[in-house]
Image (cartoon, rainbow, N blue to C red; front, side):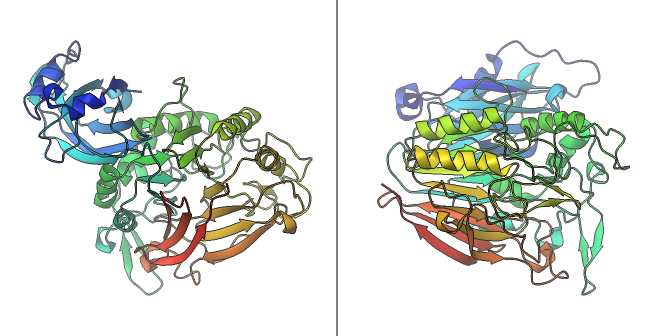
Length: 526
């Protein structure tokens, strides 16, 4: 992974005596960044260009990751300023982007001023001649506050699913325009951000006779098996101008679910699907994981271990606990055996979550789960894909793991946990009440579901399992099987506002154009 960490001291940004000029410093920074990369024969030289815009992610009070991709070998540099005109700026040299990472790269910034809009622009230079610099691409990120201040984020999932891709005639992925209109501090992507197992056809005929026309690419014309094809999933989505603009202005917190690899996958699975020549899911997952870390502005874990689960500490009011309910799960089954504490997250991840929750000093603890807790998600006729199986009694199978976590939160008096999730292709608000549950050793809490961003939408809700006492407070779906797709506008995202004074969390569920469908305020427990 081409990622380079560079400290960026706050005084560099704020004291004019130490600030670099916006233009003159860049060639020198590139030239002094390290030894030039020898250009091999037949490799293009000259002024390199950025091919898929810029993105930022995993932003905290003082740092974040900046991402880009080049069209050839190039040295990356990131210029950062608190001013949009870059009159005062610091240029941070980054790595050389090579074919090894498909010419993607990242710079990890640190020392940024807390609670501030930080403007950045990325330039690329020929690795053999630092004077050959391409045109920059600009972006913005907002760092987390160091004091109790308002926080706003949006979340959703499920992009380019079931053959519904980028249709320029319909405005492309227009939901990203609506999310940008909320001016969020960050976007929590709950997984299925691409469908590696989903072919994008050139056209689709709607029930009313209209033609939906997708942009198509070779990598999206078959299921992804090779590393190049997994990389192509990311490149396809970044063809959309709405997504590129959103990613340049709104930092991301990314997790993954199944479709980054293939539907309902689990470790050790061997496929019988004849569309695949490589049927070992572990091989496919390894390639998908490499592409995910290459193409998203995501940290590689505290030890460089490439794990997805991590904590993003976003100021005094919010910690985000990002779960990985895919990499460590057991095989999908009927899920009716004895309760286990290692069924969908794995024992080590559960222990990690408990430690991090207990260590958290933030008012709100957002648990970002890629799958809902109590919605039954079948995998074929006999197996279950998620946590619940519909029994509604004492915890069985994977429910034991969730029971352990909920009991731990309750007994350690950990307050203000809220679960945000996706996967089921509709939006909902669930309130979990121990007085109505078969398993009662937990503190009441909320779970909110959102999505899809641009995919098929459900027209019937999933069955709700009563083990943990979930109560449906709201849900919105497609009205029927004919209007269950982006052409009819039934797509959803969620928005969360935390008030810096009262610390009240307000959750709103929106449609594709930003209309509020449901809103609830949650008072913090003291």
